[in-house]
Length: 450
Image 1 (cartoon, one colour):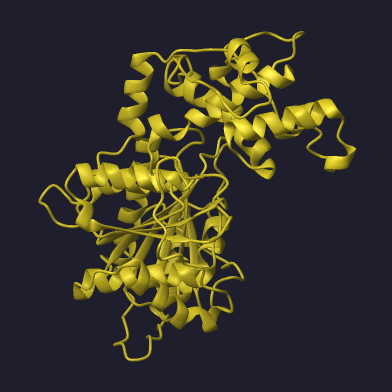
Image 2 (tube, rainbow, N blue to C red):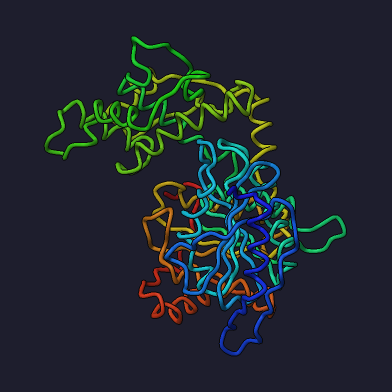
């Protein structure tokens, strides 16, 4: 039975006919509509164990080739969260890929919201593509179950760029009616494409100066900004072996050779990343850059270090004299900006949360986004919060619940939240989740914050 089988969809309709939701205390029960009969509709699927008891799940596929998962809790509040996942994932999408995202943000279902998330139609870079696929699954849900009471757009990590782009492109329909009611961004890459990846291009150049093994002298040479030559392959395991060979990253500090310790210390100090994030950032600067350059930008270079003055090593003069230099092609920069940069012209209440010590997407991107939105004259629609955490993929659970509560009150009651009120909401719901609230209500990043 395929995820698109009509027979499975018929079973889904029978199931729905007998499904009666519960309601939140103090709320009128929300009647769950019978889904429309749509050829190729979703099939029922076992919900992940992270979801609350009584939740129901489905999986399906879009005409564009993306897979999606839907979850609806027994106590559905009538509203929907449309999720844009991070990455970008460079592999071929699989039907159950959204399960990881659903598990990570099961708090949304526990708080009474329906959830839908897409794999996007293909792996690799493409913010506009991913934004369109995100809006397509919003339409899938609306077609199957009718228009929800509220629809919230949520983006995590690179998905924050995707969701912010989707909010600029699809917030309103052609008649000015709202497709979404609010936006939630979590550890989002909201600097956009042209400002979000430069440090990884620096990493490739600095790493190669010290390590000379990516590529090795015996291998085909290519401009580092390409990531890899077109058609070449490098696994994460192979990249890790090369990093370990040069830096001793897999060893304790005491076990590293002086040459390894020097290389590692210099790379981390100059680029400004944490030891534990080195391989991940280098992998993005390898396989993602290859996809971005060769598949999306026609082989053109969007990165520039021609005027960069590197600092923080034990010999900055030697580094700056010997590091590989490259200049961006204006055509590549323009294409990347068109695809992934943000205008700041938001029209919906937007809340965000970002870990101050996020090792993957530096918190300074929030300062850049604030500048972008303020310059567009829409700063009144953006509320940013920050936490004293050092994680990227998953923050403390009650913080997400508090962010959702604050956003919904803003939408439904006109009560705009601020970091203090969201932190207070977190404290109120934290006992139910058994996790702490770590908001820093006084923090304000600069573009250079890491």
